[in-house]
Length: 296
Ligand code: ADP
Ligand code: MG
Image (cartoon, rainbow, N blue to C red; front, side):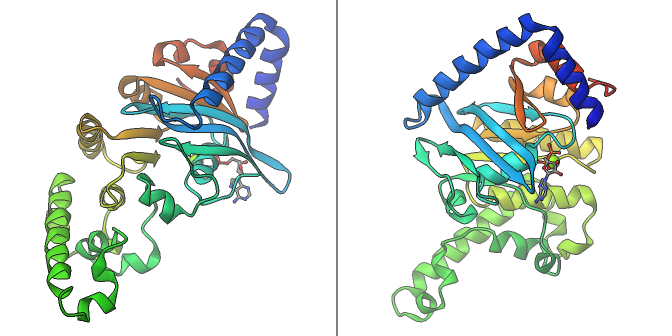
C-alpha cells in the first residue's frame, strides 16, 4: 500500500497537466452529481461526497460517482482502496461520516440494509452461519422479506389463509426458477454449508436475486469460482441486465472488467482516481501508477 501511495503522490506532483485535467473532470463530475441527486434522470445510483474513517484511516474519502440505469459498471482499485467500504456505505452496513446516497431519486443515506433492499438496491452477502445449516432450497425460501406468510397471525386468520397459501406457492415457483437459472436445482436439498466455494457464490447471487432488485452490487462475485462457472455467472448477469437490472461490480480481474463493463470507476486510497470507458482507463497513467507492480 505504501508503494502505491508513493507512486500516486509522485505522479500528482510531477504531471501537473494530468492533475489539472483530472481536477476539471472532478468538478464536472461533482456538478453532474449535484444535478442528479434528487431526480433519477438516467442514473439509478448517485453517490455524493461519501466519507468514512475507521480509527484515523480514511477508508472512503469524499467519493462521488453515479451509475447509469441499466449499465454494468465496474468499480476497481488496488487492495484497500475502499471499494468494499463504499458498498457498505451505499447499502447501509456502515453509516457514512459525510455524504449522501440517492437511489432512483430517493435519499437512502443511513437507511437500514433491509429497507434499502426493499427499494430495490441489493448486494450479496456471505452465507451466514445459521444459514449454512439450512438447505439451499430453504435459503432461497427465506430470502425475500415482507411475505404475509412470515406473520403467523395471517396464517391463522380465516380468509387470509388462502392468500398465504397462494403466496407460498408463488414463492416456491420463483425459488425453483431461480435454482434452475443458476443451475443449482440439483443441490436444492443440500445443506448450504456443504457447498463448494463456487456453488456458494451462486447461492449468494440467487438469494440476492430473490429480493427482486432493480440494482445489484456485486463485491468480487467470482472469487473462488472456476472459469466454467464464472462464464455461466457472467451470462446470467448479462441476461438480467437485458431484463433491465443495473449492476455495479467490484472485481479483481482487469480483463474481465474491461471485457464486460461499459463504464469503469477506479478507486485508490479512498478516493475516485479516474472514471471512464475501459480503453481509456487501461491507458490512464494515474491508474497504471496506482496499480504499480500489478498486471493490468
Ligand atoms: P477494498 O475493498 O478496496 O480492498 P476496503 O474498503 O475493504 O478496501 O478497505 C479500505 C480501508 O479501510 C482499508 O485500509 C481497510 O483496512 C479499512 N477498513 C475497512 N473496514 C474496516 C473496519 N471495519 N474497521 C477498520 N478498518 C477498516
Ligand atoms: Mg474489498
